[in-house]
Image (cartoon, rainbow, N blue to C red; front, top):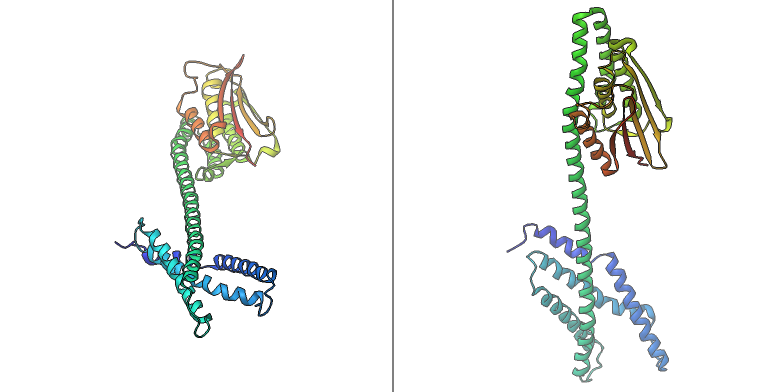
Length: 360
């Protein structure tokens, strides 16, 4: 039964054997053999009729190229069918036949008229060259198999990396799909309530919301954002909420300039800020202050903190809600296990801390 991709496999097998590299190796080996023979003749004092190194190399190279051509044809033939144990018999047989043919031609060509054929020398020479030729052929085949196995392993690794990336992108997209309605629904509910109770403030807030969405929505369609974009979105969001809460909401944003390009999943900071407002500052009649900091911790770690001086931990503050759970999952999907989201109870309020590695 032939291999369905037999023609392509046969061509690859043929040129895998007969290529520039194998021809250079054959040239080098024949040149080395020619040099050793010349030195042997020179050392024994047989200098009359001594051929040149180039002539002797050329004479030896022709049989080597013939064997390579036969080996390439054999590999092309064997590639057209499934591998069998008998394939090695084909290879050894081709090498023996090639060297027997070359030895026979040289014996007949170089024999003087009337000189007998020395069959013992002929057979021993054929056997010796067949042995070395079979060993070289075996090394060539095993080397090609090893190179093929390495390419297959590398291809499989690239395929696994592609699948892992696609899976990660699908996971991030699914998580973003859950986060976006959660974030926007709460904001639109506030706008709706203001329009019903304070139409002018509601229209102002709606205009601010439109401006906020115009700058924030494009990043939601991407796989990630950066700290600078996230902070801009958070500032717009807090200004929206400040219109609702008035003097009850105060905020401060502090970030080291060289961290603004840090890549982050979209809306991770907005989720923490919304959580602080909803559970920390919102329930208090006097409101409070929200502080957002971004700074380096050591050489390879960035820390982002969202801190409020609100009512602190309560029944709904365990870090297991949809927003916080998705934030953890999205951070780990982007940065792996080195990313963390921790909640810390303060004397007044809560500090949410994101820790991510700095990727150069």
